[in-house]
Length: 78
Image (tube, rainbow, N blue to C red; front, side):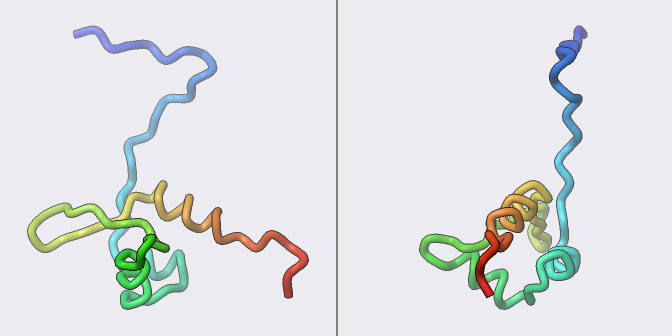
């Protein structure tokens, strides 16, 4: 089987990392109720989780990082 060779300008892709609820809470400073409320809001104010199994969910690390970047203060606000 032949695997495509990445071009010099394209860094190799890392596999997506999934974060469980305690890690999401730690990274965002939000509690479970706020995370789920943000997912249910219309429009959603927090990324949706991914079902890993019948009883386990997780969040894509990239989705949480994007959410954090969008929430960074723009400066000039106190």
